[in-house]
Length: 294
Image (cartoon, rainbow, N blue to C red; front, side, top):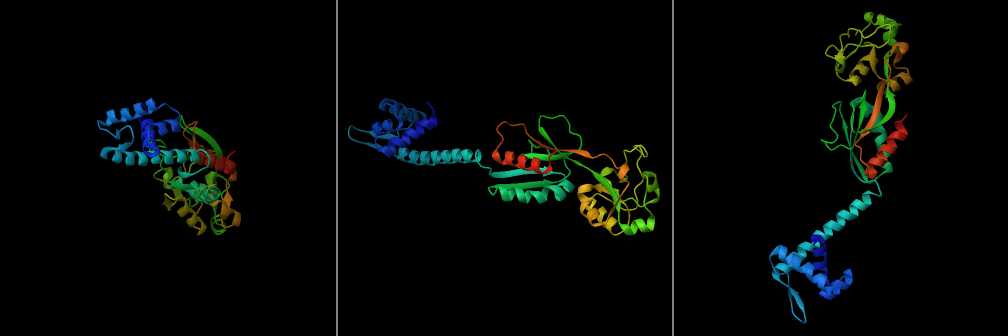
């Protein structure tokens, strides 16, 4: 017999006062109620009830077991209620991983709008360039920049990740404006160490091919630091458009070499393929695709 059903019937017998009353509540026979009680007593190797023709009472073990059964059944009911609620309204904790610059400049600002729309959802946002195993580390979704390896995840395309090359007006007035990538040999090119140990710039256009250009004297593993150096007139910076867009729009930085920039890299929102996706994940996916989808 089902142990939880037997526990429910045992609790009903105690609270209703008799096997007959419990049988009426569950619309089964008194004999079947008795079988459930005997099943529990056999499993426990102990008597739970003492019965006479006039009354029934709990044994000492029966009283302890009754209290435990009440708590267990209440916890099960609470768990079922929570599960039912989660299938109807977005709630719970979302764990999302996003590359650092994209996360700071694009993702984090709009997440406050998402959380405002869904007040029962909490967000844990991991910002790093480490490729995280979603299943192994229990993440709900991730943003990936670049070509995707074959996987069993669902991949939804987002707007491409474009690069821009720029410098301050003061630097260009002093050093001149490069017209082709070849001109960069005469310029201070701020190097990004995540592209390699030398931080060298690489171009995909026909004029430059795949040959890297030597980076200048300032190299860093952080695009924000390179942007600051460019704003101070030290050299040219090549970084994602999302990092430079505000300064380009304000005129603090001037875009150069537009015709030679590498093509935008693909961006995807990925998440496990699960037909029973929770409302919190479904609402998150819909929100991101509305804001950033192509």
